[in-house]
Length: 434
Image 1 (cartoon, rainbow, N blue to C red):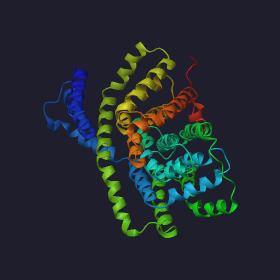
Image 2: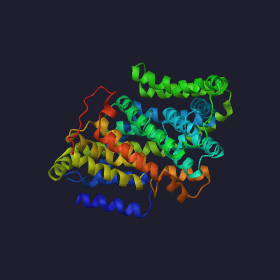
Image 3: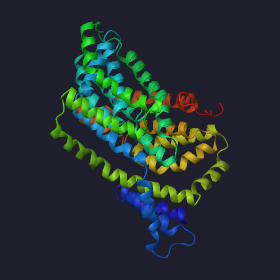
Image 4: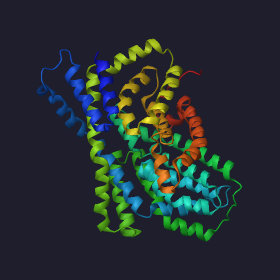
């Protein structure tokens, strides 16, 4: 009866178009008030929720989310994106589809700095799209490539969705960041190969050593940012949270004092923009942590695992089913909502089938990354339509072949765990071959 009550409450709130914060809050209160045995007699006994909010807000890793968002916004308002594009274009000039490959490379590097797909698409796509079309690349190809390249922001570390998954499931953020390198390179490589096959006949450029040297001088500090951030994390010199603070400091020093593309009076406005993005997200996150704590204490995931074990007998069947589920979910839910709601339920099931939780986190994020490119709520589709000033239908057509490529990448990532775990150093538990 309680399960039907939760489903009914969710359905009513969805039909009323309530925001996620209302949905999470209502479900959390419902669970605490009606599901305990015996049920609570009054709302005064819900003090445990308040305690859980403090428990959730007391996690150091939470600080990494606002800091990475601030760093990304600082770089979007500065000149780092433009400098990265110039450097990439100079290096790839003589390669078939060189400028398109430069766009993919720029998306990958900027994604490693900002940790956000929409920010990557806005920063790189807004600059690269006019350059690609002016150079003779088809408009539809350019749109699809940049809209898809923008999604690399959530799989190439540092990644805000990875931080949220780590909080909800209880795995190492550093391990997730390391695990994202292989899949990120794989998806970037697929985009580059696609560029060569689709636009390799567009006229090549020539080596211009003066331009190469000038672009490296201009863009070296921008390129060093992900090296400093990720190198420090992977070497153990500082934590993911500390790296986020260093990213903000680095961005301010480089953009204000060295590049001089950003003035101090603009920084408060950038901070305010970041705060608007974070206010609701943090409350949703700590409500989700409270709900997750309740489910664990009442063994809801364990009971779900037991029931699923009677229906699904092998890791292969589980992976097929969960990939289909996540692809569908990605079409209708944003990535944060999906991780907050589904990760605490699906991760214990994956562990039960012998799938490493870090590997499963990468699988989940890649599935939801594809959701950025699928209607009806694909975020990058709407962002691309806005910045490229093209109808949504044309943007959807432009990304369709790349969605197929990303599905191939998803299959490889799901069934070859070494792609994700090869650099982590943990046990790579692979499902048996179908």
